[in-house]
Structures are given as C-alpha cells and as structure tokens.
Image (tube, rainbow, N blue to C red; front, side, top):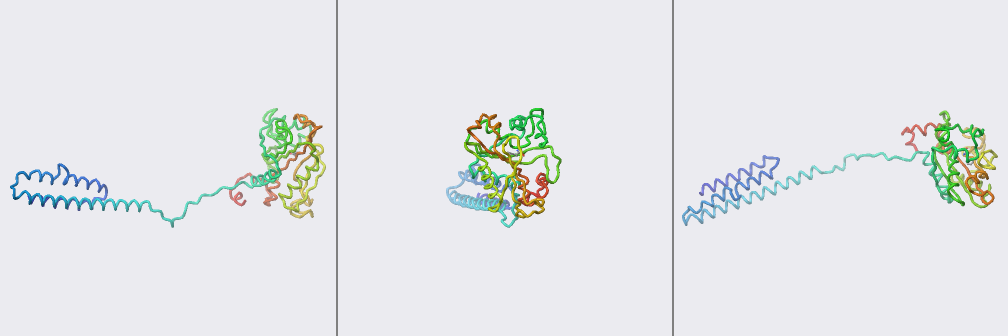
Length: 344
Ligand code: PHE
C-alpha cells in the first residue's frame, strides 16, 4: 500500500507536469487530473477505502502517508491552476493591447457647399433684421408662379423666363416670387419673410447660365411701408454682406408684380466703380430685382392695398457666390468635383 501511494504521488506529478505541453484547454485537463486522483472515486480515495484490511500498527502510518500524498497533490493542482489562470490573463491582455503608435483611422469631414455657405450667411443677415425664413415648393402651379403675380397667360413677361412645364397648370418655378403669394394668402400683416431656394429655367448651360440656380425672395407688408424702407433694408444688407463701404443704386425697371419696380446695382466690389473685368467696365453689378408690391397682387391675396403696402425683392445667389470666391464658371458649382469643393 505504501508503494501504491508513492506510485500515485509520482503519477500525479508526472501528469500535472505533462499538462504544460498541452497549450489549449489546460484548465479542463487539470480538472480531469484532479478528479482522477482526488475525486470520490479517485485513486487516493480507493486506497483509503482499503485501509480496513490493514493492521492496527500499519493503519496510522499509511493513513498519514495517504494524507501527505493527498495534500501534496492538492497543493500541486492549486499551484498549477493559478499558473494557468495567470497565463490566460496574460494572453488576453496581450491580445487586447492597443498600439498607440499605430496610425489612426482618418475620417474625412464633409463641409457645406459654397452656395449653401453664402445662402446661410445671407439668410442670417435678414434673420438679424427680424425676417422669418419660409420655404416654398419647387414644383409650382402656373397660378402662383405667374397668374397671381399679375403675369397672365400670353403676357410677354413670360418669355423672359423660359419655363419647364410639367403640364399646362404645373411648372418648375422660374422664380421664388410665388412664395410671396403663398405667404400673403396665409398670413396677415405685418409680414417680414425671406425665402431662399432653387429655381429653374430652360437655359442652355454655359459659364454664366444653368437650368437650375438659386434665388432669395424677400417680402415685407405692413401699414405705411415705403420705397425708403426697401432701399434702407437693401443698403444695410449690402453693407453686411460686402462691408461698410458697399454702395447700391436703384435703377427703374419693370416687373408685373411690383409698382414701381427697380433693379438694384452694387458698386463693383472689385474696382470700386472705376470699371474692370468683373463688372465688364460698368463700375456697377446688377444684384437683384425689387419694388413695391403691386396693389393687384395684394388684393388677390385678400390684403387691402388701401390699408397696407409692401416691398419685395428677389436676388440671384450664384452671382454673389462667384464674386465672393472669385469663381468665373458657374458649372463648377454643380459638377461636385471634390477637388473644387474642398477649397471652400
Ligand atoms: N422674381 C424676379 C426675377 O426673378 C425678381 C423680383 C422679385 C422682382 C421680387 C421684384 C420683386 O427676376
């Protein structure tokens, strides 16, 4: 029995030592060894069961030896278990290690399109003056795009705006002015709005023409609004956008939906009025159309022109953007070549 116990001790040591070779599932293999030697049906237990057959002198001696072997095996298993756990933790830490010297993942940040940037800036100026920003549909009724703006069918004024017709009654809006009508039909004065957005005209594409472009409409209706208010507002706007030295002038013009009407010119920001390439030698650059809202238009929207008056203006955005960024070909804004867009 003594030999048997010593043999058990040796075997246990060997098997535990052999575990080191076994890279995977060492924890399970160790548990199997524990069961084999220390379990209820294990080797040492079976030796202890046979102790009854021993003499009274032998029993304590063998009993002590059995305890020694058991505690040795137990200690060895505990120690190995710790080693395995440490090794696994080490492995895990290594696997999850972050190499801070590796190059980071670079994500390109997008940016606002130059037209959007300028449009936002222009809108902000008017918001600062107490205007509200409203939106209107790009697919619009002929009724709003022309008729209610005092441009009846067959009127020559329609010829200046080559129109995309969806059908006889529906068009792609050629101007943002229909928003004036939509607002005046729904709201009572005082009205103070701007409405930026896309407009469409059937123009051939070249450096200064595009079938899609942008406008910003403005409308003010209240008691006692005069042409002076229009001029003052636009002058202030020009100074905010182009700097304190900016100057504008009003030139008589004709629009069906305003009376009187004017075109507004900006003193060339490049040459200061002397005449240069940008202003084509004129010294002035036309920036917008404007005027006092026609009494017929007010009446058509249910606003009494005897009580209320108003002014309206509509400006093209592209020209402002081209001036701001010194871009001389409109097409660049719509090709969306990132090499171009990245510059703004
Ligand atoms: N809608 C006109 C255009 O596109 C501009 C305009 C707007 C003129 C408002 C007067 C008043 O040419």
